[in-house]
Length: 521
Image (cartoon, rainbow, N blue to C red; front, side, top):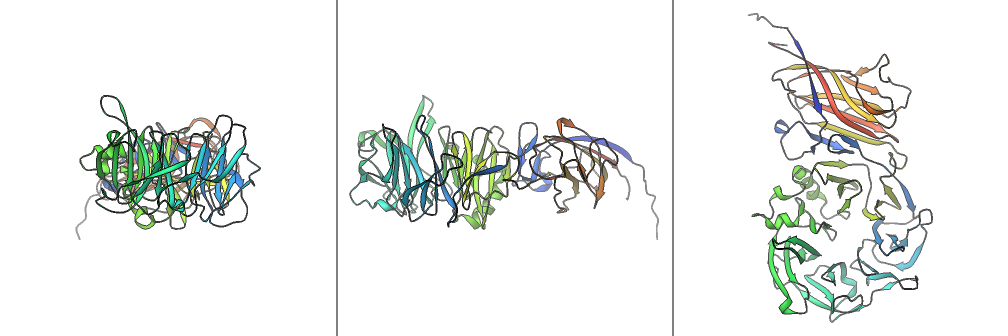
């Protein structure tokens, strides 16, 4: 047998790897993914210079024993007279005042899954099974709720399932039909509805799922259009201010995109319309301007296209799909039913970076007085309220993209230095996976000041199965401490896991120290 000389000389190297602020990537293969992306980013939010543990939530209203869950939340806006409603157990509840939620409005429905629209001081509830209900406060500050006040030739009121406002006209969607209904005159909040039949134009069939006002810059100024969106992804765009006047109502174009999902498929943002489709979350303004309206590159969700397609393939018929803009924190949330659970796909509006929220059982979302709420089985929770999930620990995990750390060839990674800041002591599980071999290691719960090692104390780390369990002190400033690690390979991925209760954590970067091997190791 021939013997070969093995060169065991090593050279220590050190690099600093920024945290994956480009967010979750489910588009590129692992071998080609840029280092600032993440393979997994659960319950951590990518910001401009760091990733941050998502906020938690607290109970806002408990509606007691019932069935079906809180499937609808709605905000009513009137100066000094805002109201907040939940639809649960086939009843409408006024939950405006925290701590006194048991305010049954005396309305019985066949289905708690409603769409709502407010025009002037009227808020309409529509579910495609009952005559729509209208809530309003009159000039004497008296509340009223009951059947809406519309009629129309051949109109079956119980089939109305969604609504919108465009050009001062109220529009309504008829369930499983290509017929829309609109007020006989602009500004009406009751009276006669006229029908608007789109079946003569629809090449792909299906039914109407949404109507929206669409504002675009046409080059010479701002133009407002009325858009009609079908279940097959066909979009009809009309210009004009009066659908009753043929001289002032014109079809500007028809377009085809991927199929939208459900009657809550649209979310309006800064004049544009974001559509939840089978293969992504599309801004209509970009999609309709593209040569291929279905091109994934125009979707906000292009970087997580694989994840969206995976979810829609099995769950498109489930209730719970919805988008909401949370301006206070600068991100948009897309609620996604997954089997019997839910997850949220979250995008940083400023940077376009994505992450995923998990362990939030949200059937619906709503903004009320600039705060974000979600409905669950029998409770309504206020999101962004503390740093625990109503007292339960938040599990956060980030797995950064694999990279060669600036050096080709095999290497031994011996030390890690995760630079973080926190609002209280917490314990961190941090390690490296190498060469696409993933180890699914448990979360470690935060332990306060006991049971682990603190900054600059000895022993300052412990190892178990080639990972470090490491406890930190509260640190308003970024803390820096080298931690033992043991991994050998060509490409490495930093895995950062926390399980905390009542703690805010910011992760800025990671120092990595390794030795380069040569020859055969």
